[in-house]
Length: 330
Image (cartoon, rainbow, N blue to C red):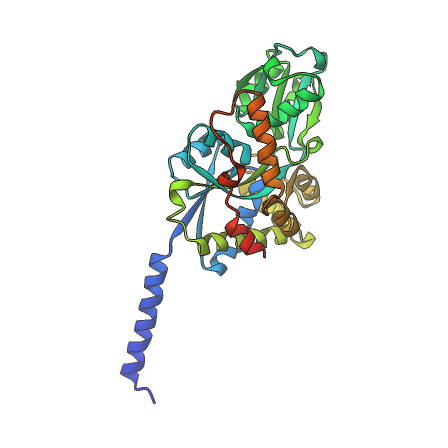
């Protein structure tokens, strides 16, 4: 029989060890912008999936892609979730980055809009507005222009915030823009715009995923990264269950799309249709050796070379490290 003083001591020792472990548990900061593709992060947070997996995660939401990119470059966050083409653009600018997972595609949410009275084939020399002058957006535009018999060198690209870009389009100062969400709707309704292409028509041209600053790779625990991905996978499975769509709409309205027109349960299918969030099978196909992400990076390399933007060597197998995500999926 354990005497009371000894029992009390053992209990205090156990509590002390548990407290110490809790105190030393690292918090992982994940940066993102408000986008449907990032909604599994908010779901995982609200459902407590990471807590169950023993990892602490703090989501840091930025207002613009530019702010997110700056935080990543300056190592203010541990991981970033966003458009992979943006990470490639930063890498070409000299920022040491490593891609670690592709998780979704833009699947109709990004749109190319022209004035209703504009000639699509008469755009040579025209100024085209984009919300981000990175390969994540310009590769989509490049593919559209190629279908019209135009090269990337035939147009002039100007990067503008989506709000300013919509205003200039409505005022007739721009004939063609690449936009998304409510900003694209404003251009259509108020600017006499017509949608001539969406990312749905160019499958996989705008993938999104996780990236890490290379200098932080030695700091981040692979087991913790695996737990982060497991939480993401649980969230994706949760979102796909129809019984959760009402609760999912709540997460979108409170977190992911805060400030936009509220979404209701019946609109979830339409919301999910605009962004293709990968299921487990697709994740493995896209992130495996010689998989879809590697092919995308190879295509991007061709585009960058043809448009004179390939400022340094771009080896997809060096830029992308799929070790953790593939281990989790298998």
